Image (cartoon, rainbow, N blue to C red; front, side):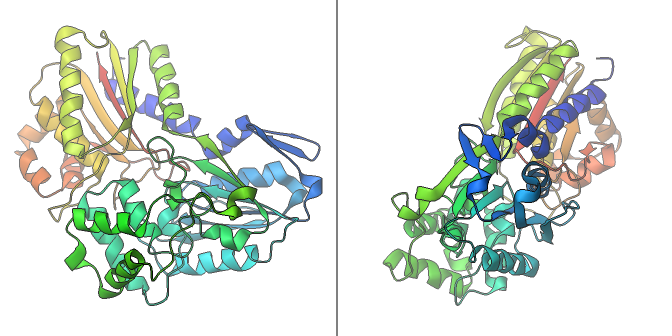
Length: 441
């Protein structure tokens, strides 16, 4: 505990290792001969003509590589789509890189390729669909009349609006021909098994990667309400606005609902989530000598407002030894949002860390507050998040850096870069939302 920032990074690394999708699949999968079991489900692979692997998301390459090992020679073919820089060499599964968080041509082309080969699957075939965070941007087929440019502009508007990931995905599903259960049409009549690494609070299957192979309870009306809530109606490209209005009026068909018979041959398994990372972080912190408390795995809201609450709890620990006694480790998980008003560079985790530094001010105690995206990417930057502690505050004062000014411009990256407060992990191969960690000596 002599160096709290290094200790915080050790705890983070332990948590990230625990939710690597290949390790999660190894722990939760058993194969005896040609009988494969995952959780409560089992399949006799001998009863299927062909076994396929498809998928999308930042973690899907690691999942695909492990499924190759598990399925062995029973795997016929596969293809998954990952964010640029997140691929792995595989033997039978084709890995395609594409744009994230905004869809690009590579994503559209790779989705078409997946659709073409799963449409050839028959009733005696089995399709494993590997889904993780990022899949919403990576897996896409556009409705007629909507251009790639239209969708890209709409996605940027949503991502800057402060909307939650569930709200963003609700709109995305109603601007797509594969989201909201619609990929199931291409897979049918084959059986489909969804293996899902959750990056959404409470693990709702219809929100993770926008639920391409599960029922969707959202509607065009709900999507339109979100557009109005964030005052985006007059900013939308005309084709997008027209499509949503036609959906509300019933001219465009809805996404697939829970009573659709196509889902009789679909099952879903959550292979990992944020709580698993937090539990490992808790165990590591205890080994390192900290009294540890997991406050929640469901944190959401504006990053800078969440930062104020976390800073208040850290001060409570410092001054009153409550709600956990020193030396203390406080752990939280979830996914905050940022309403972008400035033109700076950053992400929700960096903004949270900077706002926490502002709230802690000149607090004279040995503490660390860190916020990190488990996928290794925070916003459109090369950082995973930010870390702050008293020496960071002192350096900022010496350099005459005005925290308020940087927050006003949503420029947390530039601030943290100047004072050594960025966390850079590179692609982690996993994605289970964010981890927030506070240590008090």
